[in-house]
Length: 220
Image (cartoon, rainbow, N blue to C red):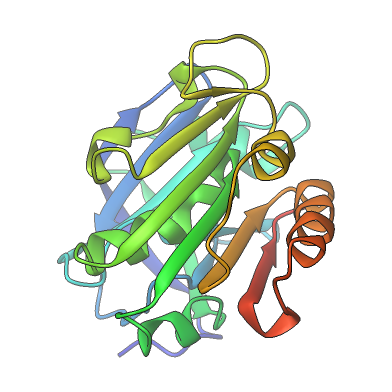
């Protein structure tokens, strides 16, 4: 079992390009145990720059996946975009307890809210627990960014597209929350952009959700 503060090297076994700037890296677990919702720090050996990425796949898999978006000013993401199968990356972790409370509530209803690549911890949790009762709101620019949407239950995945009407709902996540009824007997998990999360929390609390029902992981 890897210790979280030790750097280990992993060999890339597969690369999936989902859009022109978003991709999934897959590599062997190398003895790593993780829970859905945890993240790793990743970079390159003998380099100081590392970035945090939530694990994308289920702990039941024998591989490890991360969903990455190339950032215009991103030193690490730009270099990761250039890796090839057989290349080596440096990894620390896993870290975090974001979805830990959800693991004990499989009979509960869940509302998962994500912007962009913030969908990663929810993808991991749903792949590990496919029978749960959930709705997943995904804030994206257009339907091309609906990453691996076929992995989710029919009608459970709702893409909220801000640039055009290609998704399930035309508008931001906050627009969806304002315009639709929400089951108050639901635990809500939010991951992604901090502005989206804070605005969504205001809407949820105004609709009667308590702070005990809301769990967050801010990417930026």
